[in-house]
Length: 380
Ligand SMILES: NC(=O)c1ccc[n+]([C@@H]2O[C@H](COP(=O)([O-])OP(=O)(O)OC[C@H]3O[C@@H](n4cnc5c(N)ncnc54)[C@H](O)[C@@H]3O)[C@@H](O)[C@H]2O)c1
Image (cartoon, rainbow, N blue to C red; front, side, top):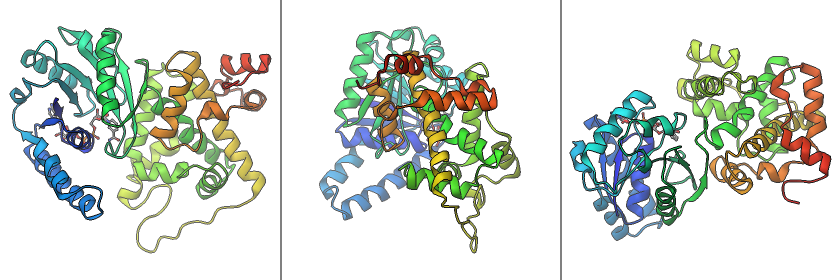
């Protein structure tokens, strides 16, 4: 199969590797020649390491490299079966790239975007044949993360979405189907992991070290929210929160925080700048958590309940199926359990939070309330 990748940055180069590992002939294009050179160098280094570790034989590794061509013109995309765009997150630029692509490729070529936050429907609308356009959303790093969200636009032909899903499944990925709604499944449902943690910090419930300790030791998450935000970078995490908030017509549930905004303004971007919620420069000491079990329980309960509420609402609004939501959160962001599997006794806790704050962000999903009245769980 002939694959085209537009954009050779973090995502494009990773997706190209996945496709090449699965025997596809991949053409990668980027407007910056330097990006192509870096992608090539990075892949050679990665494959060298994986070969030394015995993950690939020398022959396999050479085969992967041979499967990828770095090209300097969009014209080299004309014979592709599937093209995945992974360029800058800008709607107008993406639309113009799709229009150019359409003038080059065959009628049968499927056009996909790896956008994290833009409307796939809007990108498709720029095309003459919008029924062949869909979202194929990989997670970073693409060769490692199992999950891929498949997002048909309003205009997408069902058979084309099915075909695209089968291709990605054949690359060994776990695909989930998501409605074209802001932030799809993972980036929508995961919002409270950050926002509720910051809200508790602002309220003085606990400091970052204590909240991180609670979420890892008691909650079983791989990384605490503050460590994770510092790792992602506040210059990346904050704008996503802001754009999700706008995309949901300013629903208070997705409200960003001043605390994080100020970190961005100060240039305290996290690990990459040597300072975020924690210090990373030489000699910085990691603050010690308060390991009070009751406090830890209160913290994890509040964040997990908010995550469950978000997952339940995504199901209620038919963003995705129960199994796809649970699979998305365990395979896309390594949550210890599917959130809907976790859902138990959430209504009274959410109602208590609502009573305490009178803030609509704590409104309980109608689906959770209905199930609780009926004495049901998502899996009973
Ligand atoms: N980084 C992530 O964690 C992540 C995860 C999932 C999805 N995404 C999405 O994937 C896309 C790419 O993100 P990234 O992190 O790889 O970005 P990146 O900045 O690492 O790479 C983008 C690349 O696109 C190139 N580019 C820009 N305009 C172009 C054009 N008109 N034609 C061809 N190439 C062009 C740039 O030169 C750059 O090399 C975005 O839509 C982003 O939202 C990112």
